[in-house]
View 1 (cartoon, rainbow, N blue to C red):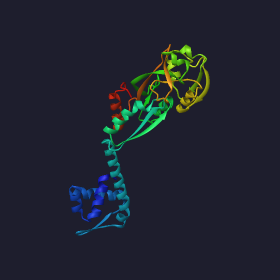
View 2: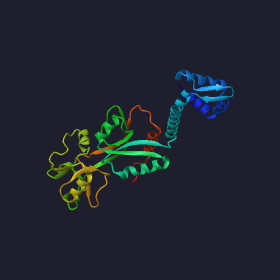
View 3: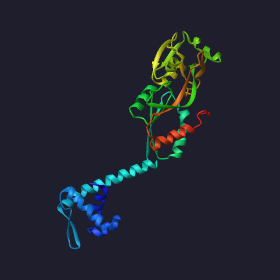
View 4: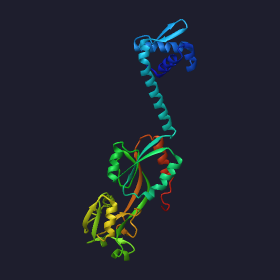
Length: 294
């Protein structure tokens, strides 16, 4: 059964005349008649009874009509959805953003995207770097912004921008008198560990196995606002990315000896053809000025 056969059948149902149905479908009458006869063969009986100039639906034709109308309507709706998607009139995008990337770094890109693709339907997925990598591998994300040093071979990672790690501490802390904080100065400090922090991965990438050696780890939390609130309360300090949004009054200094950097990358699945929404995001992300003040 082919869609043109169903379309011809429905045209005859409406006109009850093979000639007018052929004109409506912009096809020669013999071609329309042949297609309807083939449909009758497939369904196992006559769909129309032809009596001189009169054409009537048979019992089988009346039985099949609602099913074929629904089939045709569904197919047309699917074609329209696909056309809208291709024109970016309705374009879903599953975007992963690592939870340690501050919104201020990305919001300008999102604004550019909404202006150029106004009907883009974006679903933001926030999570730790490794979780987003797993989601990419499972096909649950179209594209992601992730700041890990290494990725599986199945993923392509395009560098976008780099940022240093800093140590955050409360006002009045001894670090406030230092221009930078060498790692050796962290020894003995009360420390608040950010569970989703990828700092150990970057530290290990430098060939140093344990970034928390000598620290007095007192609290651990997945929530950045809890960590920052505890820092402001004088309960310890924490490593965090340079561009992470901070509570007002929270102090930071760049970590040195070694200096630890992370590179935020645009991650996609290697070899996968980009649908229009993903292609638009990738194109704008590549052109975006990530080094401008945000």
